[in-house]
Length: 378
Ligand code: FAD
Image (cartoon, rainbow, N blue to C red):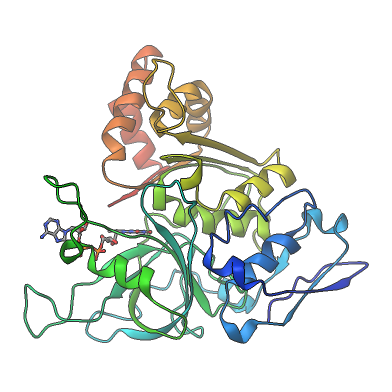
């Protein structure tokens, strides 16, 4: 059961179940509004996506106005105790069998392709830190190695260590369904669709899923300075680790991490229907305008200053003075998403550096040396 532990006046709000919402985009639903400024509306919707066992339970929250900046209590707080992140607790030869809690399409009808938010119940047995990945072994046989299971596919974790139910028992992934279109006919060829992403997006609550990990240290959120600046660049599902960071910074009450710095998210997607977790991010903007910035690049809807498509690097260029100053001041910068994003971004950063009379190669190696530069692309 999820609790919002809040001070002063409290009221009990039933998490009603509107089954019509379950098949549509929970996060992009037009029914989601932020006028009430409370986590109750977001969380009640969020909780609607939990499995049927959670139905008809209650979220305790206080009055709408008072709840505007309250944070959600999480447990178990022992998940804060470890000095090092958990790593490879489960390996491909002995994966952990977890259970699917929910699968929700989270893009609107005009998004090209499908992206799903998938919640997995690991019952607290596969702990992880924000920014790590899980491996998934899809069912079936590896066509290249008959008799052997499929290779592991990695997915960035899109929740905090407490999961979307705030109890440390679940993990969320943000998965784009890999679909193959024949280049000649333009028609979909299901025999060549991605194995694991389709398995995940087609799975149903209660289905079993073999997971490995957690893995990865590159995208861990550095927490030594709670007032640091974090510039987060994402294309598409690359937003996954940042959703975890931002929930930890702005949504959850973490006794030993009171974020007072600046988190700046640049998100590149095709169009507004393709935006991911936009309601959560919009709420942080409303509640923490001094600590959160959010810029979107919608390649099929917006034009850059040269009249071309607006990509994330065009947004970086637009704010390059500020970004360079923040980097000089020790900001962390993160890149996550499709591999193809990096060449355009690197080119832009180099051009900006040249214009500023700086040597990009030297600056980049300094950023890497200082551990300010974090890249995870796939
Ligand atoms: P596969 O079955 O591996 O196929 C790969 C591609 O080949 C597909 O596009 C498929 O359509 C195409 N294909 C298949 N057969 C043929 C054929 N005969 N001819 C031509 N093409 C063919 N993905 C996410 O969605 N979200 C994440 O958060 C995420 N995080 C990641 C983090 C890391 C660190 C890494 C390394 C990867 C991450 N990925 C993520 C990518 C993910 O691991 C998978 O690579 C992706 O889901 C595709 O896997 P699949 O099994 O669906 O496709």
